[in-house]
Image 1 (spheres, rainbow over the protein chains, first blue to last red):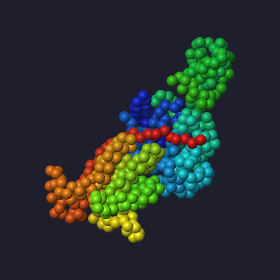
Image 2: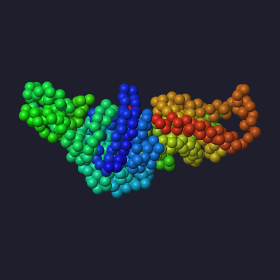
Image 3: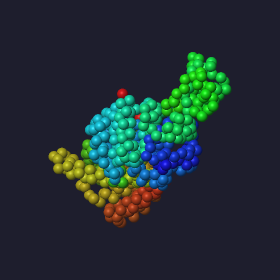
Image 4: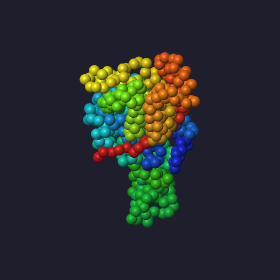
Length: 285
Length: 234
């Protein structure tokens, strides 16, 4: 499978935070969830992709081209929705469009207006007078209007407003289906993303904890729950992570573990959701 | 590049009235009355202050809205972003000079008792030269340290440049150039204003060239992230 993004031994350091060395590839034409808790390194990865930051070492490529050398040209093919709006607040969306549109040879005014209508974006209202969700909607239509083959979404730590999140996911599903667009969705909250995601890149403390297709990830584990006192310590040790509360446990265990047969007798087993897997993997770290 | 410069002006469009009234204010304050020292160089001062105010307002706006992230997410290179700001400064100096000319013509036509220095193109090279020298000092600091790091130096440099033309004119008229300026005045007195302005412009362009290289070097690999937290509204 072709990759739209690759990180090769990428390292980046700030005060109190170290990213990498990271090596991973994001498949082309797929919906990739970039998961991890706040501070895991998701926004830093996005800034590295956008050429807002450069790695201390290693190489970042988008569409097989090094972002350090081809950054400005590559950005014609990337639409990004940052976790907050960075437009000039004195202007309204129509004015911003007049200033930003000409930078993109593929700018499609019809697409801009169509999404503005669909999302009910107040184009004539000054950005500073808009709610946080309205600002994000404005940012989204700008990210979509030049028909980029790669879309990057960075969900704020507080999450998108519920209705907007649903609208956004519907649009992204459509983009993936119709245009074969590659999508990277960075989020702390993976609820609903499971329905649309193809691939999961899970970060923890600046490292890749897991990078694989969603189906493989979910099939690779079983979620078990039951009473802790029936759990033999040997079986308990087989869990990837186990959480205990009021004599009950819930844990994640690899689906190829031989202890599963024994576990079946004392616990309920089910296929985990993405949220289940990631929260347990997060617990391990 | 054109749209980067256009952007810098567009975001300041609400200051048009301020610019016009500020120009009128300069004419009124420093009109040709006995004792006024500023009159002969009032167009020059207008151009310098317009450049400074536009650069300052752009920096403030950028800082407040984190728009450096937006600008650098566009399909433009860092070197284009930096170069565009220098072009903006040059265009602002030209705009300030022309605005002074326009306001001067309007004031002269009005039935007020205000003596207005006639607009002369010969002042343009000097306006550009002074404004670009200030820009050459300010922008490398801006690109290296952002607005907070460059603010104080910017204020001092541009106020110095604002006062310098008048100071030089006074020293020249009173024959008090000292060891530094007397030879310069002697040399200058043998040349036309056009020639002197063009020499000043060439020197300032050399300074801009050097400054641009420093700005590029400092900005090229700079990590960009939100400077101020996003302001939220319920």
